[in-house]
Length: 123
Image (cartoon, rainbow, N blue to C red; front, side, top):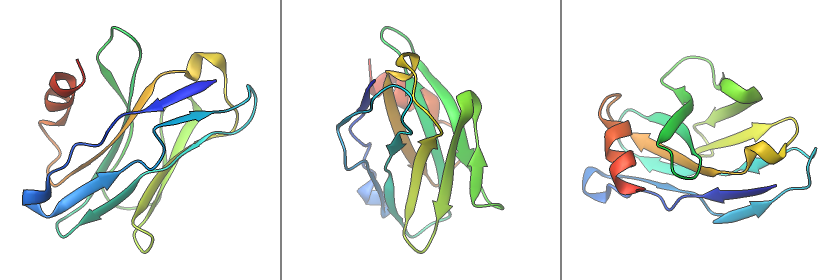
């Protein structure tokens, strides 16, 4: 299973950034993938994971707003918000060939406006 990680959108003027250290990962089918996302922010932190299949727009997988640090999303995915480690890594118990896609970790200081901006950036 080949998983691509999109280049991060940088908003350094707003004192925040997100980094996905791996540009691609290859995981044998059935093994648990982990997609790493690290962030830096001096504002309230809203974190999102999106998926993009070829010739399609972005689809929200999960989001962290506040509250419980472990967030469950669609397709059996989960991510854990670790404030001390400034990370929001995406995990799944096992991979399937249909998981092959581009994954995007997004940091925002607002909840709205993210999807349109991303869809324009990744077309």
